[in-house]
Length: 131
Image (cartoon, rainbow, N blue to C red; front, side):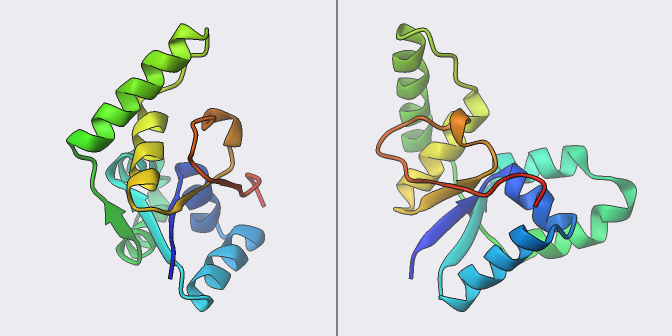
């Protein structure tokens, strides 16, 4: 059993019934993998909800394990942001915290935006957005 942290792009695609994302999530559950998300992704989903999506979003989020963001994740995120900035690459605070949460659970990150997650040793699974 492995853990996969679903980024906001993936959650939006599942919420909006995009078949490839829904299929991949069902496949994950069938193999015993644990779909997770973080409080940051929950906030991003709620912020962008269309009025008709509220109930579906509650159901989707209720079926996911929500990974905590603690001092360790905050420290890791800050190190990544500092190190990448030193190389001229700007990373968002939210993306770094989400990536650190995925790393902490020993899992991988599923996202439609793999370019936003160049951190190592993070494993990133590209779920192309809109599918």
